Image (cartoon, rainbow, N blue to C red; front, side, top):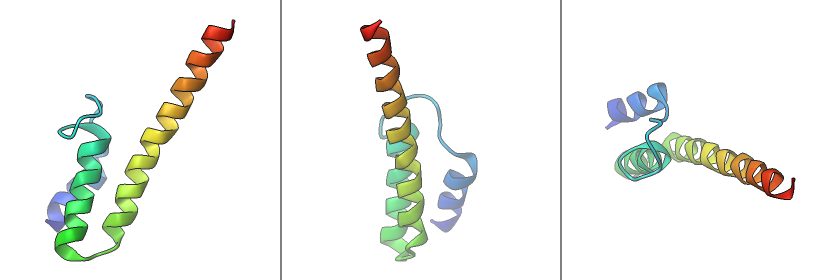
Length: 71
């Protein structure tokens, strides 16, 4: 499991979407599974880091859409 988590962390996000199979949800799920199996809290940190990228992306997307609508 530790090797799987290392691959997730090194390769980063797949840019295919936001489903459980690809992207943020799948990566976060992998890190949470690694934490559940190993008990190592670094995987919780990695899950939070991965999901924070989603929130930043969504925030920037909504700001861009809002600016377009208000013009």
